[in-house]
Image 1: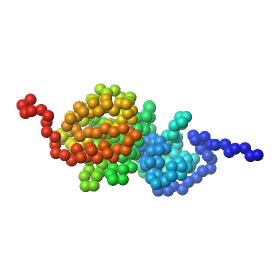
Image 2: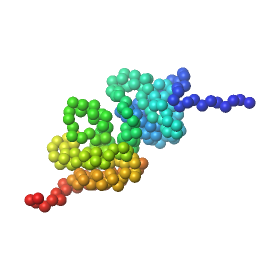
Image 3: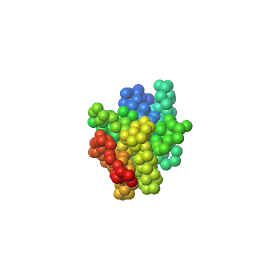
Image 4: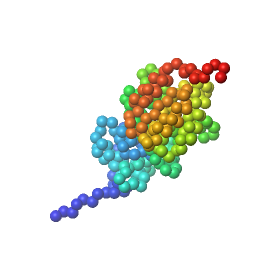
Length: 262
């Protein structure tokens, strides 16, 4: 009687695994260079469209074994969180690509931003012309004082129109007064030069990863009466909310709610 095959722990590499990088592998490495960290499901959603999940997971495992990817210490019952491995970093640097630092502290909020980014990138009727997460914005504007840094700033193209959207990702850890201050900052920028990163007309989207917080979040964002805004739950597809936001952004400038002379 043969003994059962012992399963390799997911955080330990198999020896002697080599891979020849495919275009999809390159997409995974490029994505991780910008995401810094990403869950298995996010990488599959982003780079393996139309591929069976188990097939995609096997390929990610081979990239891990070949040292192109690395994983954070895994939590029991949770999916892997990937980062670039030593071979992946070396490969990208040889391609003259920038490889940034990992986020400090807890990763829940960072991963929620990545999940939101991937969900928008997966919408086949929209095109992300530009998408900048807060860690890239802070690096890019390190020596410049900004009135506010969104969790994610996106330029989204729908047919012949491009819309600027500032996204705030809420995991239930930030106080409502902090969100209210952010909304006030957006309101002060809207409709006035230079606006938000050069865009006077932009939308605000709040993505709730703690659904029980949605009523409080909805109350907070109502303060930005002049700025088109939407809210959706992180587990939902963002298509419907973004379509509503784009309709508001295409509308003429809103009239002031205050009578003349007040």
